[in-house]
Image (cartoon, rainbow, N blue to C red; front, side, top):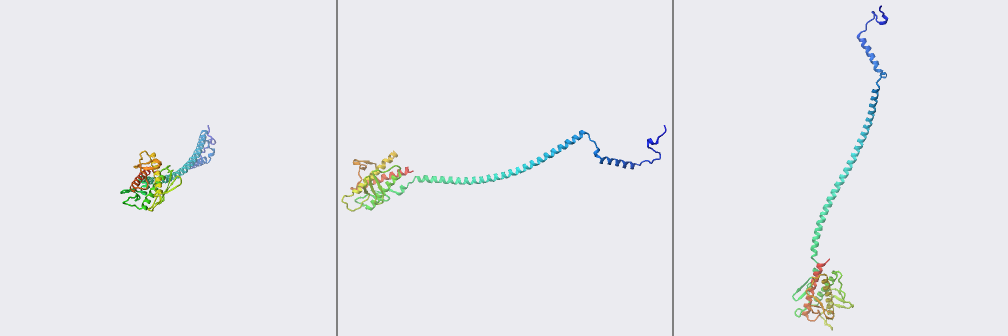
Length: 300
């Protein structure tokens, strides 16, 4: 079979190509292929996978934005909590300081209260009547605030001193009446006025609880009437305190005699026999001292 040159495209007289020319052709061919990517055909499953990956990427980006936002919210919330914590810590420190101050004040007040209670207990053992009306004796005389109540032939005590003593007795019994609750003298009213004290009867008659050395036509009738009224008041006080305290018993009890007169150990207290009058006055002062002790015990 004869050789056909056209069918093979080969000529014996054609110049053979060099290796460099072949490499240039390959490069040009490859460049053309890279520039024309639009004509590349990918498999359908690969395209689907790429689309899923891109969608997942978008979801992750959105999730990342949400996480960033939440982290920012958490950071702001933490700052707010730290500020609140600092505020509460400041308040706690303030309360602790206030508590410390209050405890110090409380301890100081407790100490002051204990001291005041001790002082109050010591004051309970005292009573102003004991200091205001000092009842004692000097020989045959009973004394009140150093004033002798009585008179003897051998010791003629001046009436000014006797009147002062009687005035103190009147003032003391009136004070006892005021101190003891619900005790009121009904038959007589004591009117203390120093050395010129008086006693007013229920009928309105006023008797002088004092006298002088001058001569009186009817003697010491006004003084004796005042002493009678005084003993009635003293007897009323005696009965009242014995009702309140059965253990209370005056050393020289007063008794109501015939005619309603009050007697001390069966004896009337009226001016006459100086020694007898002075002795009864001493007994009366002793009973007054016991009443003062009763008032001091039951005061308040």
